[in-house]
Length: 153
Image (cartoon, rainbow, N blue to C red; front, side):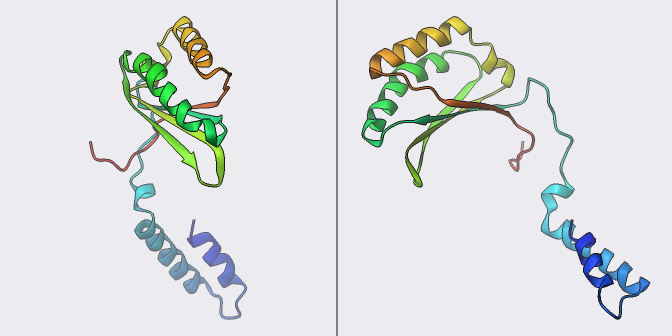
């Protein structure tokens, strides 16, 4: 919050008084609303399983294997995921600061639809992918639910 630190600093000045404090508070609140309109308009967070979700997977893949990894992922994993309701899109990101890192971001219409994929399908697909790659890649995995978006409905 902008206003609180501003008042704190003004108290240490010799000319601090109650009127100046109120002016600082008003200026701080106005600045906060102008500089952070998204916060001012934020709605309560929906924690239900029906909000959009992101599946975030980080893999350590040697740079010389990344093209094959992406090719096999697109050939094996993407069709399986796309066959389930709620799959929206998939992206593969590289990290310029860590050349051996790939991040996959999978967009789901809802957390519930993502989690509805049967475990045996995931296990079979994982084994098929590992066999195609000739090695196992275990990701760091995180799931996110949408809390807020600047997109208009």
